Amino acid sequence: MKIPLLAITCLLLFSSFNSKLPIKYIYLTFDDGPLKGSENIDSVILAERLKISVFLVGEHVEESKKFSGYYNMYEQNPFVESYNHSFTHAHNKYKEFYSNAQNVLADIEKNEQSLHLRFKIVRLPGRNIWRIGTRVKDDGPSGKAAADLLAANGFSLIGWDLEWQHKDTDGTPIQTVDQMTKEIETRLTTGDHLVVLLHDEMFQKKWEESELHQLIDNLRKHENYIFEHVRFYPRK
Image 1 (spheres, rainbow, N blue to C red):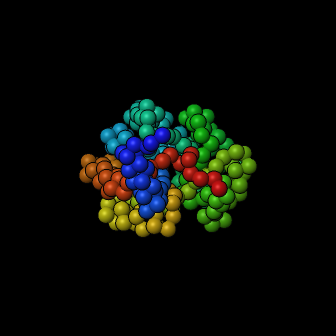
Image 2: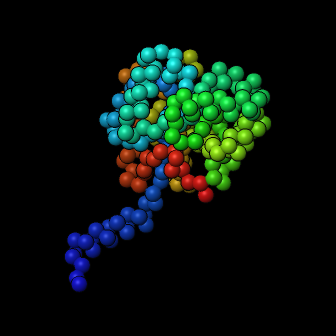
Image 3: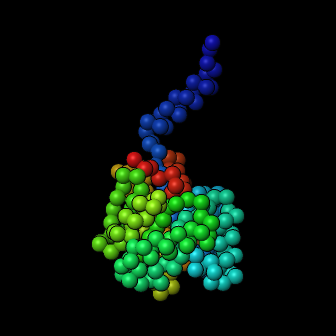
């Protein structure tokens, strides 16, 4: 049986594409929501039709009807998956929080139950700690015992490889879109998986929302870049 010429051409093109451009996975992760800015992230992601992961704080959901509404937006968005960023965010008192591993576990479990989270994937507040598959990384001694206890109770912990930093005072992004694009491109020349950390409060203003659009559009110029949810991060 003869294979149509068009099919052969497509196969050759596909083979050539794969051999020259290995697939690279980007995991855009947004921390601390729901907050002011979450609604703009939701709008961008619906427009871009792009997979992202949000790490949510239960106390923020309960803080106001507005934030509860932002949480519902995320839950109804088919491109957004929700994960665990603790119930209290340690009230930003990290040393005290991590001094009691059992309390950390209880806080994480409370958030899981409160938000009905489907996946046992956690990002610890204030710490870039990993416990996922064979990737194990601590962020100083504080938090190690809690991370080990969470892992023993079936949780995977994911940190980040690159952060789009922001000002603590008002959430304004620090690096430019071009700087972030270049850094992501550089990191992906030597690796196939990149977890990028952003925060919901970075996108409160329209120009900040536009910058998120721009970053996504810049990265989409690379046909071999795929955006994925963190639950698909490799465990080997």
